[in-house]
Length: 310
Ligand SMILES: CC(C)=CCC/C(C)=C/CC/C(C)=C/CC/C(C)=C/[C@@H]1[C@@H](COP(=O)(O)OP(=O)(O)O)[C@]1(C)CC/C=C(\C)CC/C=C(\C)CCC=C(C)C
Ligand SMILES: [Mn+2]
Image (cartoon, rainbow, N blue to C red):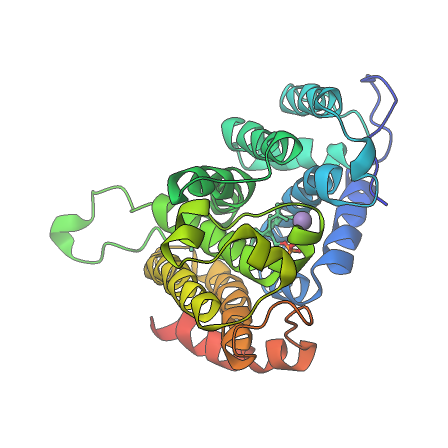
């Protein structure tokens, strides 16, 4: 279990920078196996920075989603936010923070996306329904769109984007909206995959307005009714999610070349979940949709091709 530290901020870092990066690497390898393989294709400078960000995001998510979530209160998140402020002030509190402090020195970043992610976790503490897509979008931006912003700061943009002589003095395009779109698409995909699990915890992320549009009720959802109303609703939600993947795809070629393959791989692996849901005739209630490891790995050659030509 990933835990918050009780120790106060100290002057002397609790572990060396290298040891801390190793801990972040282990978290990434444990929680995100295929994605971890993708990070190995990044340059030696960027790879550990992505692990440091991953570890921080994972620990933040675990506070409301992990095994100890029942004891998380608004005060726990206040404390986590203070720890974040300390990291940004260059004072690591625990052994994982040391790597993030180093990453922030190498890749200067705005604190706001980190704060926004904590605000997203706060929403999970006091909300279990979303009236419309605007409300859900805000949640998805906070818990996942922010990941796109943090990661882009490390991955960097291709400085050779503008090859035409009359464009050479233009600053390179930063695909911010596209990076956010990948986070939103991935989170919406997670929501569709986890409908049943979330319902068991009394949570419905599908906007109530969308349920009503397809005449499908909360009670139907709690009972796991799969009928034509549910299938039509799922087709609509999947189509909306795919629009975000399509937007994200357009941004990848603006990233540094060494980051394109891991991002294509992540995008394709997450969107495979949608294909699985379709393949299961939209029944997300009987069993959790699962993309086997071999199928994820099988998508890597196509991801590589796209990273070279698109
Ligand atoms: C290269 C790459 C994909 C980098 C991202 C690495 C990174 C720092 C990931 C952190 C993910 C994380 C732990 C977020 C915390 C909140 C959370 C759990 C969000 C969901 C992640 C998936 O988690 P999982 O499937 O394990 O879900 P459960 O907790 O088990 O329910 C999310 C779905 C968000 C993932 C976000 C992305 C994949 C967005 C990545 C965006 C980019 C890398 C920007 C790419 C740039 C362009 C231009 C497209
Ligand atoms: Mn989670």
